Length: 498
Image 1 (cartoon, rainbow, N blue to C red):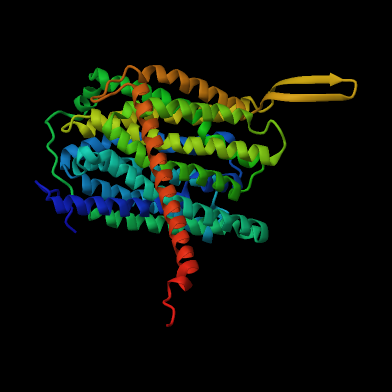
Image 2: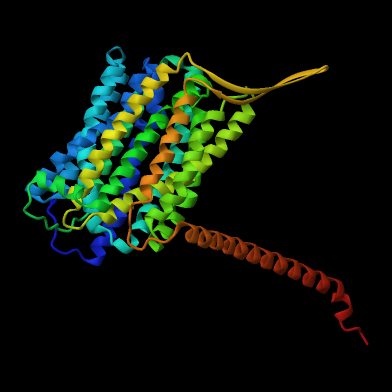
């Protein structure tokens, strides 16, 4: 297998590489669906994980980004991002298979500590592969269509996530209720299949062509310092670090809250996740188009406040015991979170790539990932600590209405162990937006103007849809009337016999 980069790629090679990139993303997402998210949390809780351990598992992907300093050295030494990405992707996905084998065939040997250890190696090597992949894709994908391409890729990935998540969740819940002793076996099988799918993704990854990069002669330390001297990029780092720290205090515990406090089954949780994914799928291409047309920062300034409102809204979940009311509120929250997340993730990725100079892209991306990783790592750990601290603390705000015939209590706010985390995370995320204002991006357009343009675009699209729909309806009605008239006049049109 030849993994050497090429001096120049043809248009056909670039197009082929982009198609393979989508297929590789689907294979990798299959692995992620089976081994991360709600299913990983459910497995951890099944094995008796504490709040701090849940926070630690959530922080592992961020903490492992410190490995990217080694990636810079390797890229500088060998200048072969594809070989580095392929090699470390294999090392990252083997531990997933090992976890599945132990859980399925040696259930007495599986524990939360064992999972944390092997997940560390998984995330550590995946981080090394991911950095070289990002720099590789920056050179492969034409910049003018970067937002559109990654939004398309994300749309396919999220569609797969939706379908697989629901099917697996229903299967897990069925097994949990009818064959509870086989629940751990089910998770073991998922990890094995997920790991195999991930290795298939590595094979597809190895076939994507790589354009040769041209690196300077600076040493690794100087490369690491260089982005910190770029004031605009430094401002992006400050915002991104504060943002991920704020969110990671709360987000890792959404599933724990639903499972432990609300007693929701995996099917309900995955249904909510699917709602979020569908809204993300429905909006991500639009975000990509607007990001390419205007700026990523503008999209961030629109989506971030929506996401913050959603986090704060979690504090109102569970105030009343009525299931329908709570589930309806969660549907709205997840729908808005999905639409906002699509724009936020796409914009953060693209703005980091856009502000990184081509020759120093690997260094800029590494610094961005490493520094934000520190704050992403601290967020879930502090969140786990706060969850334990607020375990026996409650804040209730209510209004009581007393009449001779009625004594009614209206609950306005009820904060408990988990809700405190959501409020704290939302407040900190709101503060972080102050740092976003200072970031400058080429082609940046005022947020209010873009909002007006987006509203006009959506309104026109809906108008065209309804006009077309009405035209089709009128056409159908007209044809029906003509046919009816013909049927009624037909006898009179027949010549009479002489």
